[in-house]
Image (cartoon, rainbow, N blue to C red):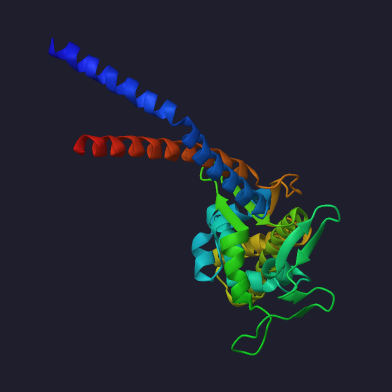
Length: 309
């Protein structure tokens, strides 16, 4: 008997609730429309960004690595680097994220303005437009307010902050070992070209670094080979020399010295506009819920007032 009474009361309450919401449908629709319309205006005013992506593998010079690891004790004693592929991947990611690397990238034409003064992208002409209050693209002069050093030109540290926080995303897939890199920018063309520059210069810098270290190692090993009279040590040094010669060969014949393209950078055809659609959808849902809450509060508040009266 008690359960039947409770079920009956719940049914009455639900009927009343739906009736209140139905009677207040105009107010609910009005609130939802206002919020949805506002979200549409906001979404249209949002700047559209484009993202170019690349999937890279880290070159595994297995023969060279095996030679060096086979004589790892001797190599370590002589100060030679015996790094694994995982170490190479971590070093590569750290390089790409470093202040030193962005400082190097800024030596290329139009990189700094494209990072620090980009305003909009003209789809018809496929040109990146700059903020005239910061940068004059014709004279290529910075015209913003001077900093404490008296220069209006942003520093490489300023550019590094924007580069890390707004443009670059890089990570390594733990399962495959692939490095995933993407660049987000107002211009789809710049996003693709900048990502290509990052990959190319990473390979160039690491190739040059290994080549210089290899040259120094060969000079050192050659001198040690002349000095020693121990047969076993001579054999170890010869093998280390062989490994360093292979480093030299790989440095000179491979442009993609460390980063090898699995899926190269591309010019994105569509901006990251899905977020705009989601904003409008969630705003419509939120507006409907808010309208319903307002209707229920108004109804039960007035009901209490009438009971008190």
